[in-house]
Length: 246
Length: 246
Image (cartoon, rainbow over the protein chains, first blue to last red):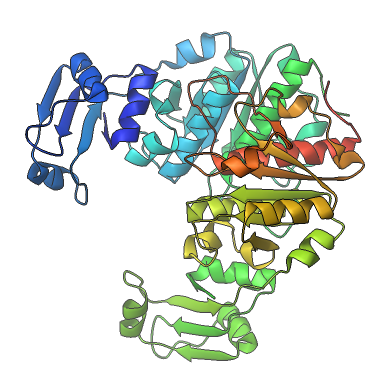
């Protein structure tokens, strides 16, 4: 479960049709009647309570009335359902350390219409409140699956017919120059951790590697930025029916 | 000036050729001799000091020996030099609130080879330590210019021959369908703040607007992700000499 806080987050919950298991509402004054948002959430939640500013401050130091806190259950996604679905694009993220980046990856996967996100060796937890915020709540609606090992993830992707492309600044080919088979099949893009890139097991010579050419001084891009460039380019190429730019 | 902390950050400084004005070095033991990194930075810095673990903890609560802290001066860029240079691509960011996003925008501008970053109505300060970290230090090498108003920025961009494209989820055309004149001229892409998108002055009907099509539940993309999609697509189209995908 994940704890969600603030009015904005609760507007996302409602918009996504994701209802809290428990809703805690601290009104501005004890007499205040629930507004539309609070009423809608309270109707759908199995449990909802009015709390005092004192309780609010204990639960969420720094928060002040009026405020909302919810306990929300993240859906469980099965690898079989994610990989067995018809989606043509998939993102794999290896060793992600920061909750903010993990959330932005989820939001990017949602926006580009990819089937979901596969995690290997994650450090950041999916239930971190920052994942919810950075994903704009889409962590509740986007399939995210974690594999116990890179080898297990590779086996499952292969069986499901995905061609794998590993993002690597040192790869000999740029992403735009690689004809990728998503036009006829399925493509999974692998991006690596913020510090070290992908682990050795993803750098296997048996897998295709693609570089995002960089012109400046930085030795790498932000991991969510890399994912967005690869996924949106792949989506544009799918839409245009092109096998490559070249 | 910006305060920079930690070994990694100092390795970036050295790699970028950006030397601290003041270097504070807290060795692991009082007898320790400077290693290669410390020696190289100290040689280039006008002032460098050994400090005790006690002083370190006062300057940077939570830090522990060995550690490095530097005071670094951000270069000043003139709008005339940035806009008058030969660069074909430019990013404009309006109302950026979070230092982490601002830093990631700078890093993305650096990597895609754009001429620089123009800021209007920024909330986040360029000297925030998180800007340095998220930009991987490229805030020291990437031209960033702030305009006092949107009107002033528009006038300067126009005079310099830039066609302006405003990112707007409600725009009728997708970015990939808009033939953009960067193939023959110069293009500036405008992205908006994390909460509200671009301000009304950037939504002028006289300016071209482009949407990044979103398939999922989120109503917007992370601002650095949006910038990356637009800039890297523009760069790919420049490289391929295409006027559009359509």
